[in-house]
Length: 324
Image (cartoon, rainbow, N blue to C red):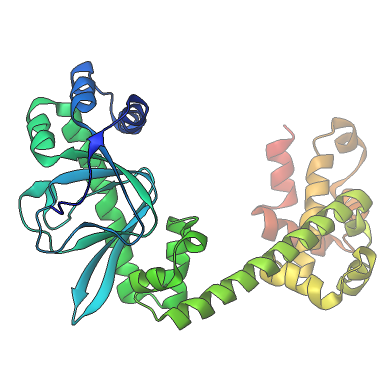
């Protein structure tokens, strides 16, 4: 192990923090708590400082208190990023886990990083004495290998956009925090490709925010003014009512809500009818056809067809089921 790393006794607050995280997986006995209090160390490393090298025995299991680390290998003098870990994650040599073999990768700090550490000799001893420690680390390893398998799969079969989307969903906050060249290496894409994909996704997010705003405005308008009850309503007239171009309204409905204009309007009409059917007085005094015409349907057949399409049963069947 690199001799320039300075290990110190850890303070109680840091020990309590790691114990709290582990106890979420499984309750920790008082005996194991005392062992951790006696053997957990702390150290800090600077950005770009190596935690352990290739072909070196990794003597510790580390817990990241603050900062970020990346695991790397070299191939034909090229650095290949194999994983990235940040706060509240455990890190050690994958190929030389528990200090039983030389590491085939090296780990380097992406940021100034504060770590907690326990020596492999101690952790291996505790594995023999405490069931809960075996269980906790089994769960941790299962989680790690599931993520590793998913990452390997998406990198092998996914295109650049799919890789980026996977990384963004599984590692929220990493994209704005970590260097682009590091993420590009992890996803096995060129930095220029990553930049292009990132710009495309940013533009899409901005468009989605705008569509969110217009969809909300459209919903409020429909609920407030009940425009769906107008038998002559058209996309152009509705767009004019809410101050939106017909083209933009089409995008909101077709691309964002994945609904045609007529299905969108009919859904409001049917919801209005279903709500009316919950009122016994309305059921006694109005026929289904009368409610349909009041809701905006222009014919009995249009009402029945739309109801069956959007509800999955005829209006008569629905009335029998809901109004017993």
